[in-house]
Length: 128
Image (cartoon, rainbow, N blue to C red):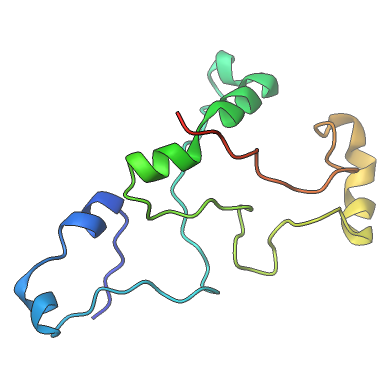
């Protein structure tokens, strides 16, 4: 039987039952290369305050993932670089010719930098 645990707290603190200690059950993490399941904060874009992309960017830049992961989430999470992490759909590097052909006609409604900048995650935050 396979169980997927979504809570970092439970994964870090609750799997200490006798079957684990005797080796009858195994607590393990799937190897790299599997499709990542994500946990995230999502903005309710129906709320006026989140409709401004500058507000969403500022919150994203302000969020200290490294501190939160270490302090709140038992150091279990890795920062995702793409919505489609570990798949051929992962955004990386500069937009390729096919992407540009699709996106260029939409240039006036796309956020600045989409067509001429690599896809990157916000910078790492400093320690508190």
